[in-house]
Structures are given as C-alpha cells and as structure tokens.
Image 1 (cartoon, rainbow, N blue to C red):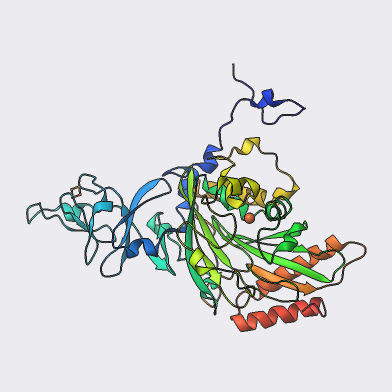
Image 2: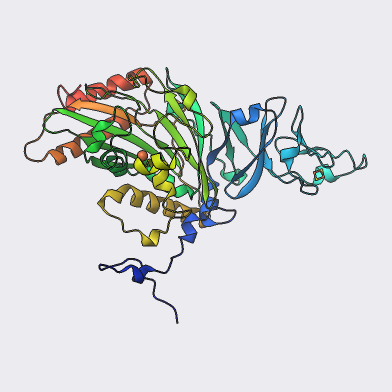
Length: 454
Ligand code: FES
Ligand SMILES: [Fe+2]
C-alpha cells in the first residue's frame, strides 16, 4: 500500500508524522544532460572558469551541468572548452599539451583545435580519414574581465553573449571571483531574490554584517517587476520618523544572474542612480554542487567607506562577510552568514517540506518563472531572451537610491510602495540612455514626482 506523503508536522511534538524523508523535486533540481532543467540551462551563456586558472598554462578539468570538460587557452590566446575525455580512447585532456592552436592528447597525440576539429592523428596513416569524420566535443567560449564563459546548448539556439551595461560602467574595476557551494544551484540563486533574509541573517540574528547597510535591520516594503528575461525588484525602508527613504534595486536575470546594490557605502544623504557592487552567476556543477562566478565592482562613486579589499577577492574569496566555507566552526555558529544558510538547506533542498510565507514572494515568483521556461524548452520552444538597448548592451538597475520623502501619517507603507513603483518606472524609462543622460533623467523624473527628493 502506498504511504500517504505527509509534508508538515501539524501539532506539538509531531515529529513522528514527518519521519520519512521526501524526494527533492526531480524535474526542477536535476541539471545533468537531457534533464528538463539541464536542457533549459543549456540555452544560456555561463561562466565556467576564472582566467587566472588558464594563466598557469595547463588545461583545467571542470564539471559543469553534470558534464566533464576541460578548459584551456592555447598559445594563440584562443580559449577552448572541450569534452574532457579524448575522442580516441578517452584519456583525459587535462593531461594534454597546449599547442599554438588547440591541445594535443598525451596518450597517442591526437591534436584538437578549440572548436573540436581534429588537426592531426600522428599515429595514423597519412591518408587516414578519421580527422574528417569526427570531432572532439566542444563548446563556444569567450573570456571577459577575468572570467571564461561557455555556451553548452544547441548551436541553433545560441544567444548573443549577454553584455550587460554594468560590465562597462566608467570608473568601475571588475575584479573576478569564484566560490564553491556544496549544494544545488537553486539554493544560492534563491537567496538573491529574497530581500527579507537580509533583515534577519544580516541584521537581527547576530548583528549587522555589512558596513553601510545597518538599516537592513528594518523590515522593508518590496516590489517585484518582471522584465524580458528577468525580474527587477526593489525594497525601501524608512527609519522611524525621518524623511529619508533608502531604496535598494536588484537585478535578477534568468536563469542564474543577480546584481545587488552597493557595498561599503553611506546612505545618509539623498542620491540617485547608485550602481551595483556585485554581478554574479550561480552555475550548477552537478545536482549537488554549484560554483558562483562573478565580479566585485570596485569604484569610488558608491563605495565611499573605502573598506573593500581587492586582495580579498578571487578564487574562493570575496571581501564581505559570510560567503565562503573558510571560516572557523565557532565563527560560523556565532555569526552565520549567507554560505551557512544556503548550504545548510541540504545538498538538494526538499521543497515539499518548506512552508512558504509572505516573505517568500520573490522565491515563489522565481520558481514559477523558471518552471514555465523549463517547460517551454521541453516543448521545443525558445527561451525569452534579454533585450539590448540601442547602446548595444542590456540595461540593468542594481544599485541604491536615497530620497527625501516625508513620512505619510496615514499609510507610510503604501507611500513607500508607490515610491518604489515610481522609481522603478523611472529607471526602466532611462535604461537605454548613456550614463550621464541616464543619471540626470532619473534625478529630474524623481524630483518631478517627489519635489525636493534629491
Ligand atoms: S586517447 Fe587521446 S590520442 Fe589516444
Ligand atoms: Fe545575503
């Protein structure tokens, strides 16, 4: 007889009712080849390595979306991402020799170009046709600001490389970093669309964790806005009766790209159009491991506290609290950070055992949109892509805005909600403008809607 699936304890001392473990959502969380989510994720460019890994001159073995690959930069500077096992007899190309063009397998010397073409089979007769018949498995790759990106889907569905406006902000130095999490990719991904965790994890539970963001202790008013290929959302807070309203914008671009507001800033005077300090992708390695790749944006415009540290950003490190495994057990327990939160949900979180509340609106929105798009791909349809502006890049909005808007005596939460909606409208309307015009358009529009706000 089939046991009825019991999802939650419903009375005191009711642990016995939920003693059986439940399976994770297979459709959603499996990322390997030919799984629904794996196929969906293969419709996007993903960062898969740091350039500094290739600078050492040896091929690097990686696993992405459950596939074993090797990534290298040949002596001409071209980057290759090939299937790890050689097309001849499957020796690993991580032991291959890098050539002027491509890589040569250590076992019998077959030589592959970065696109998988076989250039040479030196042990075969001169008239061998092998190199005209087959190729090594290969994927298109591109380096950008210290990260190596790869597209692992069907050629006919390959999108343009996602050039974000935030990858070209004047005065921003993009410092690459990468951090492993021993859990399914969705757990860290969901953290980026859950602004309420900041109130508790980064504030009330063990004290403020991020300099300049102490106002996170207050519960925010949040609004989410869908856009082609993603969501922009913002949260607003007012401390007590003061006039200042602090807004933080986040970008979420499907499936796994997020941008925050600024780090190490001061938000005690009005400002408009602050820019992001963090661009990051959470890339599934396999069902139970993910690796974040991203950039810290070092800049003088928003990071006025000057507490960022470039030396602390790179492989398995970033310069703000709670993002890696590499802290003492005592520290993790006395002051748990993001990394503890998302990895402790388990190797693959069991959604059936969650009980979502009002703070989970963003998580629910993300899951429903991902599921919709996963099913679109299953039906043979294309994913909805990101839209470039006339400037040739994709507008993004991650950043902070501080406005002077007096408190409403009757419904301040309603006022904050309308301020958010209005400022989101303004940012989207200005998205296609050059940076200077964009900032002044935003400033003027906000001051028209809320005189004296900036
Ligand atoms: S296994 Fe690679 S050349 Fe033989
Ligand atoms: Fe966080």
